[in-house]
Image 1 (cartoon, protein in one colour):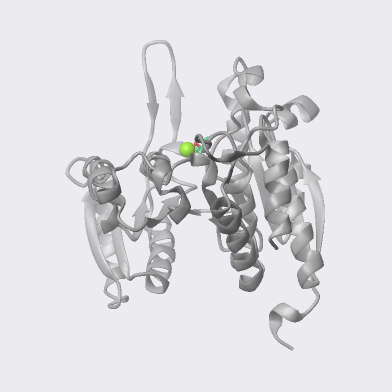
Image 2 (tube, rainbow, N blue to C red; image 1 turned 135 degrees about the vertical axis):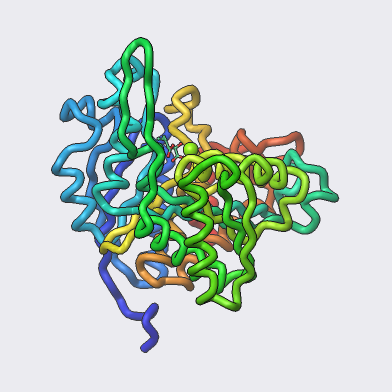
Length: 359
Ligand code: IPM
Ligand code: MG
């Protein structure tokens, strides 16, 4: 009996979060349930709380209970956090801090953000057809638990700082992950830094070169971050894997995602060396459209597919979700972020139902 044919049970931690988080997570759960039925797996969902919903319930953006739940799950699926309701809370307790804390607590130093342009959505890309050619497939590998986000911080009324620091160990482990990924893709890795100015970038580049010597099958190049931002627009096809530190990765992954038409399409996976990984859409909580049933659930549904592939080794099941998304888009169904005249406009849950039907 092949691995994927074995009936198996998986515990999935669910963090719906704020804004559109609950709506899009519900659709991803719908899809996972369908996969379970169709392929004979049991998915057990257990809910934790993160961000604003956790502030409302526990007074903090991330509770010990939720950390426990996540660490003990086989994988975690997260919606999005944040919203105007919690804007006036002290910075240390804002919803976003919950997200940073859970990444740190679970040791999720490797954030994968694939930017793939679906053939059917070519017209939605802001780039000209001659620039995108027959599609884009870029994997941003973003370091997720170091750099400015987690360095020493200080602020008074006259002065403030955030320290940017990276250790050899932190750079080595993310670099190895990026090379492993590049090896399985088109064998092209572009490491993005700011070596002309930053010492952290000097260390970063040296270590990438050192590790690169062990991966002769991967071609390594280096690019300054300002140039990379420009190259993504003028020649995105040169990119296969982009490896970069936390802040640069935050910015470049948003840029890369928009090249594919809508940030509502892009999933992400956050991996570490521990048991559980975390999967979430690359977009935010979009409080302006929350509760209206118009959010695009595809990024979250594709994040669930990444979970099946990376955490549970269920690649056939992951393919089945990705193909279902493709088919529904080919039939012309669009949520309003992608809707153009002539398309079939659908709500969040209708989109989930249509994808479920194709599985
Ligand atoms: C992201 C988000 C977060 C980040 C915010 C919400 C803290 O922008 O996941 O890209 O900066 O990492
Ligand atoms: Mg971001």
